[in-house]
Image (cartoon, rainbow, N blue to C red):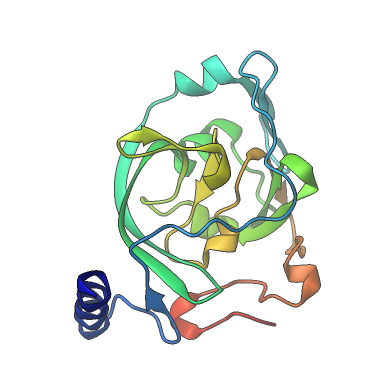
Length: 200
């Protein structure tokens, strides 16, 4: 009973502050949702690749990725299935670090995220340049668990969580928008929770 009353109090508080998007409900838990099985992680063979319309395509092993400069952010997390989890603390590598290293060509406008299991999703390049967008390996204070996308997932706080792909393995810079897994199945191409862009 106390948990429910506390959840309702927090939900109303976040709604008044404009932090709770329309149609969303606050959760104190962290639901697990994904397509396909949870992949095995072997740090010895894991690779992260960046290519497409870039001047400097590259690939990183797990140790090399871990050696990149790190950031820590606090952000809310909104799932298209209508739950929102607030005040998450993420640690990892800023997307701007990856973008700067790759040096996108002038025609690059979008980025396709490629993940284990063949999952993909699309994002405008300019969205990835925000200061709070990162490749996270930690949901503080613990390493990101496999069911929540570990060892590495994208975090784009201002979009619905399906754009924050689990088990990410690479980025493809492209000259046009291209639907990913859920977008091909009717989800919105952009996915702004405050505009309720759930479906196209």
